[in-house]
Amino acid sequence: MNNDITYYAKKRQSAKAYDSSKKISAENIEKIKALLRYSPSSVNAQPWHFVIASTEEGKNRVTKGTDDFYPFNSKSIRDASHVIVFASKLEATEEHLQSILTQEEKDGRFDADPEAFKARMYDGRKMFINLHKEEFKDVQHWMDKQVYLNLGQFLLGVSTLGIDATPMEGVDRNALDKEFGLREKGFSSLFVVTLGYSDAENDFNALLPKSRLPYSAILTEV
Image 1 (cartoon, helix red, strand yellow):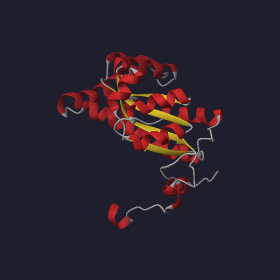
Image 2: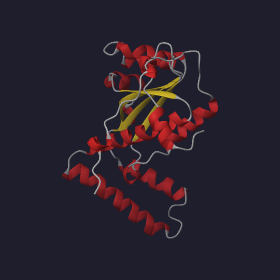
Image 3: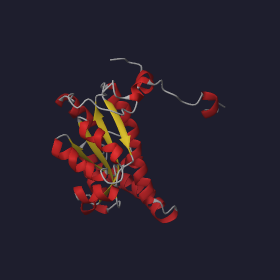
Image 4: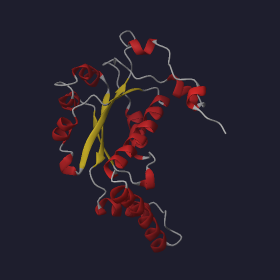
């Protein structure tokens, strides 16, 4: 494994075709789950849920979100080793906030002075949520952005495992919500990520050099 993280940032590409015969190992699937779980989020809000499909039946269920309006994405979903539906919470409920506190306490974050630190953490988290809810009036958008923050870490993380990935916003979110009962659980889908190994002979993107704007266009150093 290369220790230079920029090597993977430069190397990764969004796969445009997958080799359906190649499957991700069980060991790497556990690492993939850890990447999803240990992503940063503002005030540790973790407003997300994930559906992981690996079977033919499961992947066909995901294509309920592409077959009608985005059929160009369906083949990659079916050929990929695994597919993940990323979903965002519809509401920052009190139940969710309390579950975070309970987990933080269980993980030892409040050992020095449990009640004082719990109260301080809860008040701080609630302050930011209320700020987006009452003043900026964008709390749903704010929670969605946390899921996209997860996606950024996730794409870089899986590339260090030698796994190809493709983020797809070309999905019918309503169809996915219905198929997986996400709204009944308090979530709504945002996008899908396919995972596996590129079919190099049919993946045009794998043969192209990466292209990004120069530093002079994106950086201001002061």
